Length: 87
View (tube, rainbow, N blue to C red):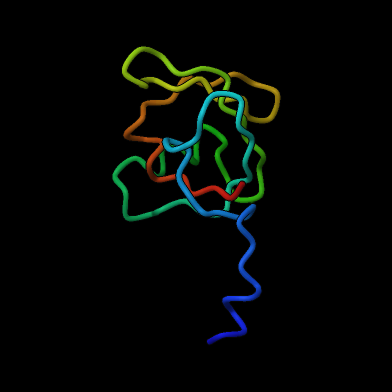
């Protein structure tokens, strides 16, 4: 157990796209398939391994403007909560 504490890397934090700030880049690690919007975000192109960047957040942080595969996609905050990323 102690070995895992020493291998902790603070630069590799798992969070959702909804938690990112404007200008932050991250890599998608997994999609929460139990979320009602999971298949919709997969159809948008959010798949594990893809790099995303938060371009802008609207007033009240909903929707989010996300750069993905060279496209700018507006996604609702609720939908973004099912996309887990690593910084």
